[in-house]
Image 1 (tube, rainbow, N blue to C red):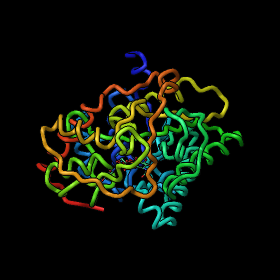
Image 2: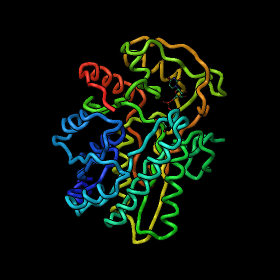
Image 3: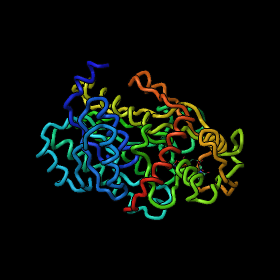
Image 4: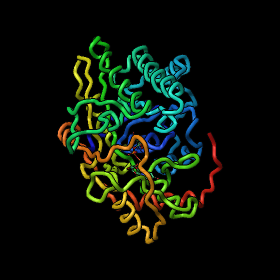
Length: 356
Ligand code: UD1
């Protein structure tokens, strides 16, 4: 492992969306592994505090460019400072499912354009290795469980989901055309939690859409009651089942993907898909109970109506990532929820002003 770290040394990796939730944890994972991350972020949905948090963990502030990925000229300017970039991880995208239904143009324009642009940037700069941030949403509503990578891509439930599918199709076409790229698409299940040190974590702007930040904000008193979206699903306790993965484990999957792209790819163009999940599903009620156990707090919650677009159940078969990337999740659900709770407590003390 140490020798791999030596090989990684000085290899510069651009992380678009590197100030975001998954992006910031990935910057930390890359730096710890010996890579040299460079953040590109327009800070439209992230807070400048993130840079301080990252620096508290890794001991230095990574180079950071406040750039929108839809601007190719700005991207190319980075290469003037760093002519030796070796890879790119593309996180920068809008991700709110509900908002995407109401504002499809915003989602198609941003997510698709920036995807095309970062690819053009890589081609112009001779960067072959790209990790694409995809989602289990590409599987739609699966018929069987756990879900493995060869399952069919089904109709996505939202414009957001479609932009992830289009992203994958786009890379497929680039590879078919023989463009000099090696791409890994990581299909994330449900990232939760925060860096163990509580220096970085999720910073949801406004009312959180996702379950775990809603839980922690309810427990700390920002929200009154959590609504469980439906308890009449065909699942063991009637609430939806998801594969919740610690964000720091998810972040490490990017290091593993880059290692494969940079050290193992041959001359041919390639595209591969990997599920990044734990392999274990938990219902909403199980998550509430686990949270109560780790936080020692009773969570105010009520059962509400189903939320449109939710699939009853989805969890990963992550065995391909283990076999081919040597990666697997290490934190368990209690640890992930404990870190999410510690982060919420830290946020209360930080009193960050809202941006974006
Ligand atoms: C959602 C997206 C997914 C995206 C992911 C990013 C959909 C259909 N999918 O996943 O594409 O990659 O976010 O993190 O939106 N829940 C409640 N009450 C709440 C909030 C959530 O009961 O207040 C339930 C939901 O019904 C769901 C589970 O908790 O069953 C998880 O929800 P959430 O955290 O929003 O993630 P997903 O919807 O699975």
